[in-house]
Length: 137
Ligand SMILES: [Zn+2]
Image (cartoon, rainbow, N blue to C red; front, side):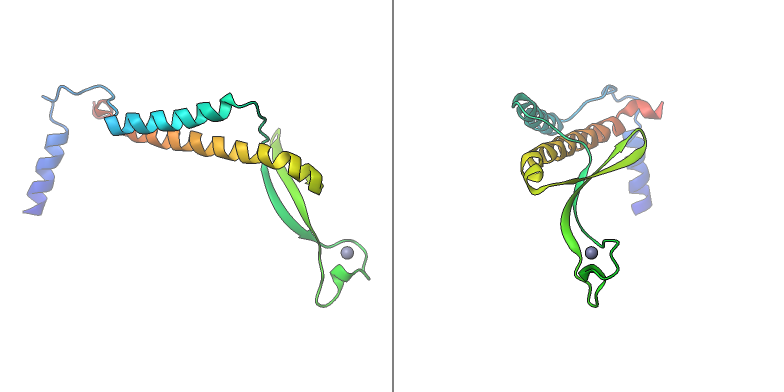
């Protein structure tokens, strides 16, 4: 019974008499794309900079054997603001001072927000492209 229903649905989807044969985002999908695009445009319209890579807080040990960071229990150095990014396939790491972090934090935040919005738009576009009936031809 349920198998028959499933089969009928499959045939209904692939119905060759269907006239709707182009990529056709639903009104809801179009509205969502417009919302995301407006947010991206709003972000880009503001004068501002973006920095690539990721920021992490790191605790470290130094090379001095009698330092507190080698004690038991150890008291590590830091936290340090570590900026990691890829340059020509290689990972480049820099340590930011507190005032550098204060200056650059908005640049990293902005990059993350834009990347997240682009990712949302990509996911939505992928969903729409996946529903394109011409894949079945
Ligand atoms: Zn140390």
